[in-house]
Length: 388
Ligand SMILES: Cc1ncc(COP(=O)(O)O)c(C=O)c1O
Image (tube, rainbow, N blue to C red; front, side, top):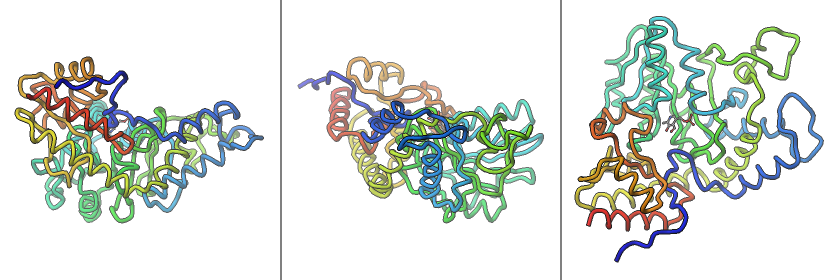
C-alpha cells in the first residue's frame, strides 16, 4: 500500500536548524517583542522583562551547560560562523599553522582557505579512522612548531560522527596546542565539559540544538587565547574611550546584540536544563539507532559514516542506488513533503573524506529531541517504498 502523504511538512532537518522549538520559546519571544524595547547595556527597562538581567542570566546558563567557571567569558555573537571566524581571524597570522578534523564545515574550511590565501596560514587534518574519528595518539604526527590552534567539529553535520573530545583534549594539552570545539551540532544535546575535556574555546549557534533563533551564536573563550576583535564599535560602556574597553565580554560584542534571540535562549536553555542534556542525548541515541536500522535493512542504501550508533548522532546522510542525491532530495521534498537536506551540506571536506563528493554528496535526515515518533515512522515507510 502506498504511504499516506501528510498535508504539511515532516521536519527532519534539525541539523540545519531545530524545529519545532519549545513552546516557551515562542511565548517568550512574542511577549518580549510586545512589551520591551530590545537593547542591552544602552538604556533603561521599566517593565518585568529586563534585557540586561536576561543577558547576564543567559551567560550563566551557557557557562553551566559547558561547565565553564566564568560567565563573563561567554560572548554573544550572531552565529557559529561568526564565533569561529572571530577566533580564527583574530588568532592566526602570517605563517601560522592550524589543525582541523577531516570533517569540517565551511565555517572552518572556507575560513582556513581564506587565511591561507591572505595570510599564508597553513592547515592539516589530524589523522583519523575510517569513520572520521580523530586518533588522539597520532595527533602529534600533524603538529608543527608553528601550530597555534586545533579546531574540531564535535559532531559532523554530514556523517554524525562524534569526536572523542576528552582524549583529543588531553592529547592537545600534552602537546601544548589550544583546542577549539565547533559545537554547532552538539551544544545542548551532547555533554560538553570544558574542564574535563581540556577545551579552550567553544563555538555554537543559538538556532540548532540550543533550540533558539537564527541570528544568535555563543563563544566561550578561556584566558589561553586573546583573539583580536573582529568588530569594533559601541559597547554601551566607557563611551569616552576611542578604543574598545578591554574587559570581557564587551571587547568582542560591539554593536547592539540580538536581544530577542538572547531572550529566546533564556527559554530554550531553561527547557534543556529541565529535560536534562543526558535525557536529550539518550533520545538522540534512540533516534540514531532507529533510523540507522531502517536504512541498513533496505537494499541499495549506503550510509555515510559510522554504522555504530554508539559513535554517532542522528545527523544521518545516505544514498540510494539508482538515484543521484539531487534527484532523491527532490523526490523527498516534492512527493513526500519531508524537510531534509541534499548535496554537500557546506562540508565538502567530509564528502571528500567519505568518497561521496563525486556523486554530488548525499541526502541527510536529522530528527531530534522534539521530532514526533510518527514523523520518524513516516520516513521509514517512505524509505521502504523507495527501495521496494
Ligand atoms: C558543524 C557546523 N559548523 C558550523 C555551522 C555554521 O552554523 P551557522 O550557519 O549557524 O553559523 C554549521 C551549520 O550547519 C555546522 O553544522
